[in-house]
Length: 235
Image 1 (cartoon, one colour):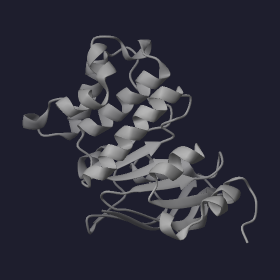
Image 2 (spheres, one colour; image 1 turned 90 degrees about the horizontal axis):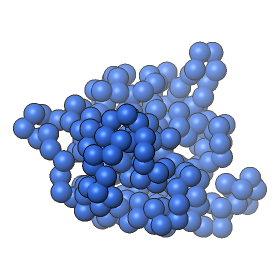
Image 3 (tube, rainbow, N blue to C red; image 1 turned 120 degrees about the vertical axis):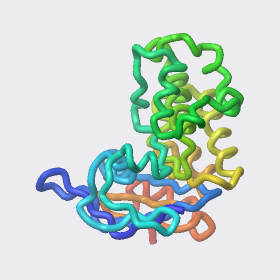
């Protein structure tokens, strides 16, 4: 569903991404991995339209997307859960979720029951302020908000960061369920190796803004991927 080729990105005079290719297809999880500062979040911001790319192409369902802004990317079917969650602390849980309505036709502006099935705590806390939730609950809220936009591509940036283990497990089950439904492509930035390996169907490893390892899970060895991420040379 999503096919991006030769992506480059600059912040001022500094080049952050160098010729990145990434593909995400419905019913799969594409994992983007690497240490801090290698360009993972920059890649997600590019795909979400939050920062214009310097070069390369992004194609969704065979239609090339120009250098359009985040709102237009969301309306095209790309949902984004940013690192740090970026919920609105003074809005209620329900109001936070309703911000996702901006991407939808008026007749479709409702919160599906499936959201509360996946994240029951959000129903219990619907009238609490977002800023009063725990980090794990805020992460669930951020994912729910993205899902309300009915994305065909879901971008998840470090969803396990700073989250307690039981919430990590729940988020993992939700991602697996979304993948198995076969209607959505998921791009997952993750540093928790076991979490990524269990969910991932293909992997892209970045170092200094360049792809240094890439391919389907079936063609990679777990120990080679782990060694690369640990900074060891893979023979």
